Figure 1 (cartoon, rainbow, N blue to C red):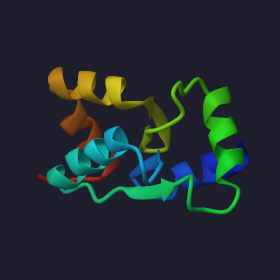
Figure 2 (tube, rainbow, N blue to C red; figure 1 turned 45 degrees about the horizontal axis):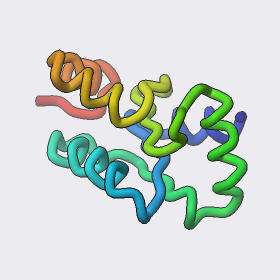
Figure 3 (spheres, rainbow, N blue to C red; figure 1 turned 120 degrees about the vertical axis):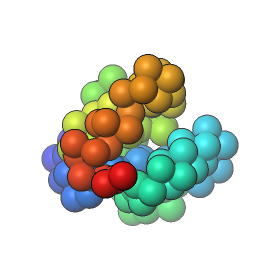
Length: 102
């Protein structure tokens, strides 16, 4: 759990993903299109990725990927991110976290 917390607080936007997950790819693309440049951790390609995935599940991420953190806080998965975007809340959240400036 501590590793997840540390990684999630390193950058304004952090995404825990799997390299083979198309939904994770779509979420990464959304943030990149906003200019947010998220830190992306591919759980199937990093050491102890399984442990991180278990920690994400214990935080309530189901499914475990994509798991998005903004400003060090867990936002959730793709449903939560898209809901925030449709409510026009995602961009202001990214600005507050210092992920984008425009």
